[in-house]
Amino acid sequence: MTEQKRQEIFDQAAQILKINDRGTYTVPTHGLYPFQWNWDSCLTAIGQSYVDEHRAWVEVDTLFAHQWEDGMVPHIVFHQLDDGYFPGPEVWGTNRSVPTSGITQPPVAGFAVKRLYDMAKDKNLARARARELLPRIDRWHEWFYSNRDPANEHLVALIHPWESGRDNSIDWDAAFERVPTEGVAPYVRRDTQHADPAHRPTKAQYDRYIWLVEHFRSLDWNNSVLHDASPFQIVDPGFNAILIRSCADLAELAAELGEPDIAKRNQQRAADGLAALDKLWSDSLGQYVCFDRAACSLIDSASVGGLLPILVALPEHRGDALVARLEKLGESCRYLVPSHDPLDGKYDAKRYWRGPVWLIINYMITDGLRKSGYNDMALRIENASLELINTGGFAEYYDPTTGEPCGGASFTWTAAMVMEFIRRAA
Ligand code: GLC
Image (cartoon, rainbow, N blue to C red; front, side, top):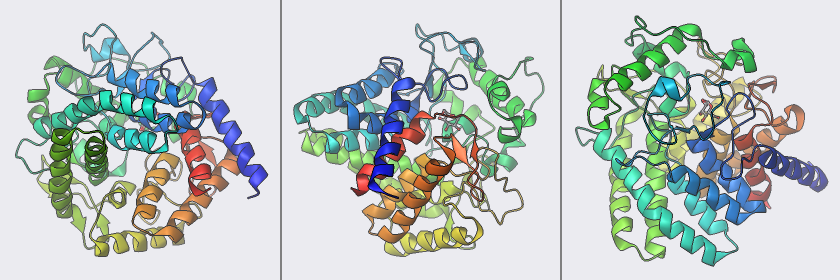
């Protein structure tokens, strides 16, 4: 790709961030997702910092302004009413002045804030903003280990598939069968009016998503009881790796900014988490897998959640094995990294998290690969990502074989990640 082409793509990406900017937060895309999403915002801020560092810090600050009193940072903040999205604030019923959802999302904030700080040209601004965010992110990490790790195993569980960020992954199928559907109040989906229903989760899945929301609402969103009360408790290696990496990054940042207590706590969390992660290794698949805590068994499912641990400081043999896995996946599809192994019978090339490539995942995986010195594989995935953009535009996700763009268009975090792919290598 020529330098001129790269610059063109970079400028288009910056334009998408602008179009989706609502002043103090950015929507993932117009129509389909009209509010602020947690991990979307943190990753978006990284792209924003290339054009406006101040605006990037505001993005993360806005999210943390809605942190719950118990420390949780919610997955959606409903800044403005918009009936184009279901389930809206009335379904969540979290009773907050600015309504939020009642569950959380992958904790990329520690990772993102460290990246913002490292990239910052205005170090005074970065120091001031990062210092304010440090204790808040630390509280969120604390919240995870005290509410989602009751047996002190150093691995946290999700209680709703939406928390994983990989909403309809094949990983959840068996455990999701235990979630009832009876008694769910009648509802009308909105997502299928904005995107092709064949690219979205099914009705049976939606019934269960909503059953869980209603169940947690009936328990007043009291996080001290929700974990044990949920029929769905999944330990996701990708989610835990993100948390571990954020703890490690927060620890480094805190040390640099003269906050030794925060540094120490997070360093310990990262070390404990890293040691515990090995329990999720599957020899037969050659990657990490989820653990179904309610059923007490590993889930034999080869999703990209099991590759994300490349983000953390893995022992070398595990890193090598994950790179071998990526090579293998590359033999069955043109564009890495599919969200699920194409050789699995349940793989679905266009259905959301059951096969398609997502550029935020490619970004995190390549960050990890580069950090551990696997530069060839990183470059291969970065090039595949730019090729997808070049042929399909800034889509929500892509078919790993044909490169067809799927889901929403002009997608914010896709654009933000592309800016990183282009500039990181420069
Ligand atoms: C979908 C994705 C989730 C994302 C959200 C907004 O729910 O699965 O990861 O945060 O859309 O883009």
